Length: 382
Image 1 (cartoon, rainbow, N blue to C red):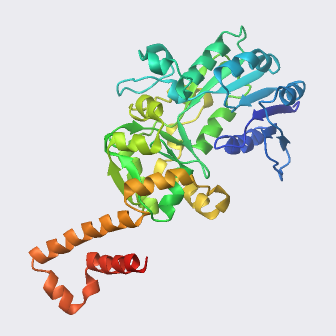
Image 2 (image 1 turned 90 degrees about the vertical axis):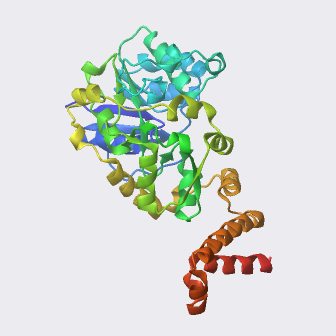
Image 3 (image 1 turned 90 degrees about the horizontal axis):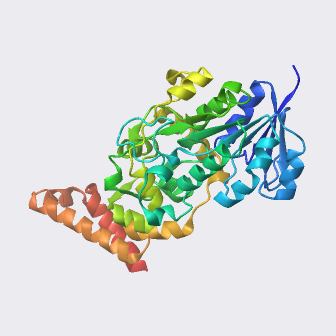
């Protein structure tokens, strides 16, 4: 069979790292662009260093006439419109990575590829004036459909996780995960806990995409690439806690928004129920829901990978300071407030008649007293 070559634009992320080996298994030679240098130890996988947003670098690549292009790049609406013709005309099959965030409120019903998009259904002038991610991707989909060609496929992944990409609410790994591993409390909004979310293992999404590449039945089509498994954010929070022993402080949605930001993502994604009907992509790829990785199993596997690899452990320092203020850690004042709470618990022991006996036997047998004593010592030293 004649060699088929696939170009992954920006393909070193959560999905791309699993897509490349899947394509290789299917007989493709895979070329991956990256702004940083990568060494490939695998035959059939080639890294090309350069910025795919740079027109000169991109033009040089497209002159090579790859059989298929899978585009993971994040564009503005204007920059994508300026290059869409160039992209689709330089390959047999162009696969555009959109997002499930283009979907509007489906009122709890499973989302299909025909469900209304935010761009078409939201009546919010302030929001529609932005180029927020869900709107940007929808506008780029429109530009692709208006290009006059049909050799494209639109792929809308739901939340995907891998060894270097985890999400909880609107928080990314560098904001909550390293903190959780250090046993420092994170915050989470009460109002979001009951909302449904869909999280897919990147390896499964990589398999889905690989089976669409050069699949003529997929030309001109749109697919939501995700599992059908769904959980409330409260349930997802408990899964993280069961794996990590993570400490969580529940706060109001307004307080969470003040700390984390991203108001549009909160309002028009995480506070909507996101339940996916993935029957279309399963039919197109021949996959079955039973073959997809359950969330708890996949998170445990990828969190172990994360904990072993220090290169993933970057931290958003500014976010950590805001967390400390809200979660009651970090400053002497906050520690003092924590000690006051401990005193209240000790007083409760006293009222119940448990304090005297415990003190006589051994003071440190009561956790609040032990914590109080250590805390007072630390404050005195300061």
